[in-house]
Picture 1 (cartoon, rainbow, N blue to C red):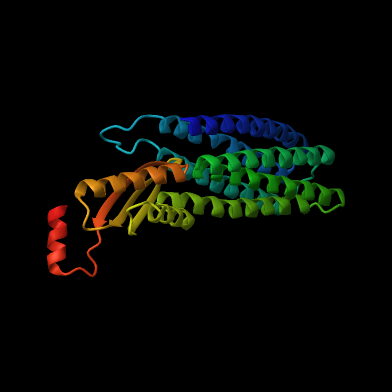
Picture 2 (spheres, one colour; picture 1 turned 90 degrees about the vertical axis):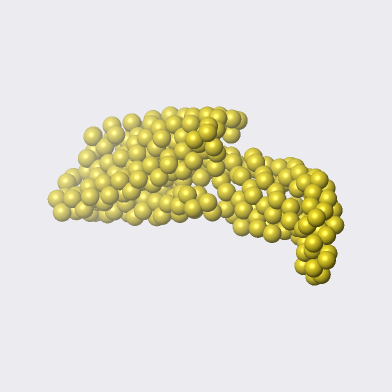
Length: 301
């Protein structure tokens, strides 16, 4: 609940920043006719709109699990991540289309000082939104919010391209504005790739291998654990669930093995902050035992 609330606060704060930036740039676009600034404005508007599905996902993520959705609604963030990637792809296509059209049909760009000022505002606003979203997304474990932050950072790069394009037009290079528009589209595609990888990995239940190593170390340090078997971690929203196997002495009772598993679960929950649920299964170590020992071990369990 606290993580979702923090994500919502950052989301709406950055939405206000990006919306204000897009409005300023839209006004200057109409006055100047800059296609590069038009592409940047569209991208900023798309970035602001991505806050809507992500906000819905954060709200859904607060709902309790049901008999149908037994793991809860945390996966809604993954769906929001897909929507963010789709918005990014659409803005890249539209920016490229407008830039190519302007190359084929050149038009004069006026109010260059206003275009440069709007571009500078775009750089500052987007970098602020990117830092807040990426930092908060990584802290609360939200891949969708990180992807949205990367989207905002791409917007900052595109605003910089607008600034360079305005400088080129001021030098008499009329082609500089549409070329800047093409650079914007390329920057969006680069950020799109990074965001798509983040979302894809989350959809495929990928986790940082360092987290698996940390879980194994905690399990192996638990009293009574002789070794570890499979260790599985998965993200559900911005929380991690774990399913692990540990090896214990075959000579102990089932009750003692259960206590070892419970102790291992508690150790993991304390050691890994984003972990919300753990299931540890204890197996007897039967390697190197003769048949009589194996039979005795099974009877004890």
